[in-house]
Image (cartoon, rainbow, N blue to C red; front, side):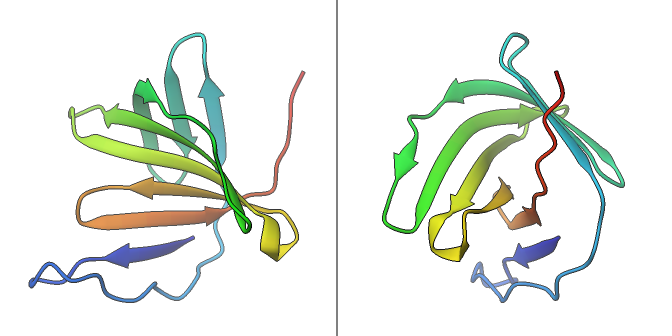
Length: 108
């Protein structure tokens, strides 16, 4: 996990040093929700499904969500094509962004 934050002048800083972390993510289309089971459990209700974006370097599936407090959050699942199809999860708040590298585990 790494974090990007805005400073007091509303400028984006630099990504923090990556920290090893373990989490579990569920994406439930039937219930329109995403839950990130990290150190703190994060619950998001999907408000809007965005069209998939495909570029030369990335495939991006994004969702406009709201957390438990009603704060708008954009969540993106990215596949970094130019980095050996490395999957990542981005959680975009107004003043900070969380980025997680993902090891995918699909359950039946």
